[in-house]
Length: 224
Image (cartoon, rainbow, N blue to C red; front, side, top):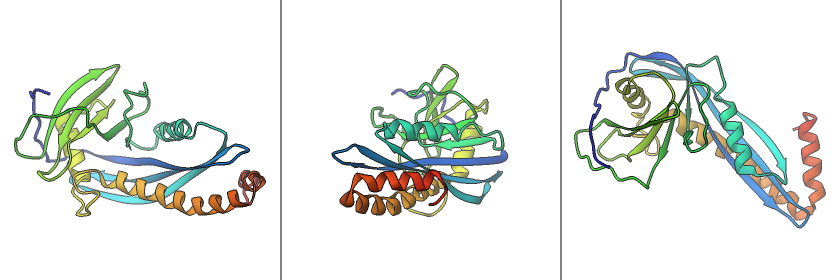
């Protein structure tokens, strides 16, 4: 990909409330059917210039029987974008691929299909496209970090978007540095509940599919 219009601004003057959302799932297949547990990690906080806070860590969960678990998880994540109480929702999705353009989001994903021929000083952001109200750009925060694709439907200029990404990408934790700390936390929360529930589901499948149905009914009645 050729490069033009590089943004390198890192001084962040933006402030507001954010939410980060990421999901994980576990599917068990039996002769009688399939059963899935879906966990959505949710992190809320505030951004104030070059500082940010994590104010709340939560999760939502759902069991689904004989469903398309990946599609259902996608729906649950996008449902969280429709939140009028925050200014930005961070996602680990590609909304343009899913034809989703609602709420106010900044989405960050790896895009191995594109090679960026740019070796300038980090951090940098390179606008790439705009379609159906969604703008896309590639960014890199540190020399050692990955190049990520960012998509947004916000009206913020790219310099402000880069400054927000830089503010949230400086936490000195290996998996979060150069990425996005709230999204890193949301992913960990979702995987924690997924792994915990997977142990229960795997034990139940050794018993009978009836155990799944019992678990679902208890959950629906608020017994879990």
